[in-house]
Structure formats: C-alpha cells, structure tokens
Image (cartoon, rainbow, N blue to C red):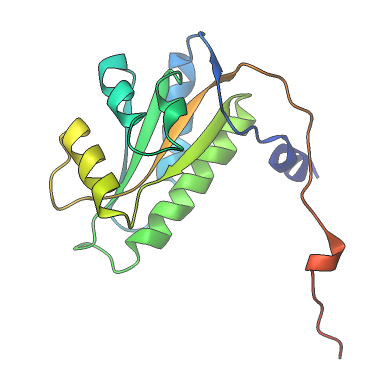
Length: 161
C-alpha cells in the first residue's frame, strides 16, 4: 500500500522553489536507468543557459526554465526496435523516483514531433543516432498539493463471465 500512496502523491511540477537537489541526482538517475534493457540514456542539465531554450521548445515546456534539473530521455533506435517503450519505462521510473524523493516532476513530450526534437537536439548537442523521447523537469515544488486520485468508476469496464 505504501507504493500506491506514493503514486497518488506524485506532484506535477509547474513551478519550483530555488533549492539545491544535487544530492538526490544519483538516486534519480539510478531509477531512470534501471528500467531499460536496451540502449537508452538519461542526460541532465543544471545549466540555466541551456534550460532556458528548452523552456521555449513548445507551450508546455515552460517549467524547464525554473526547474533546477531537466533530464532528456534518449533512445537509440539502432540498438532496439523498442526504444520508445524502453524510454517510456525509464521516464515513469524517474517520475516515481521524484515522488519517492519528495520532489516534483513533469514530463514534456518531444517525440514524435520533428521540430521539437530538432530544437532539443540543437540545444543539447545530441548526436543524430539518438532520438529524444521527452524532457523531465525535476525540482522542489513551489506549492504543497494533497494526494489525489483520478479514478472514475464510470470509465472502467469489466468483462463479465
């Protein structure tokens, strides 16, 4: 039940407190990379000069400018036909790790939009062989939200035997 409570406590990071979180990065990276079997890479940026242009990638990436850390989740299609699934699992692991570390996080979809991917690739100098699945902004949330659920019984259908 503890894990379910953590899932409900996940905080979507829309704005951050200016607090250091460097000591939590190794744990977050370990969780990100433990999900993948194939070649997937998580890189992170603390440099505000690089986070600022990432925040301009599209309308939902604005929080990248205020988050102290932004991860880019990359996959190598040459190493796996399942790079999107591998990177998606890695992304979810990082979002769960953030909740477990009392941090907020939000993922920003990049793939399959070519202009978005080109923009991120340019800002972070990512080699062509790697594809950019998403960005994940991580930090200490500026607001304290209560755990929540989005369960609606009328949206669940059961098979009757």
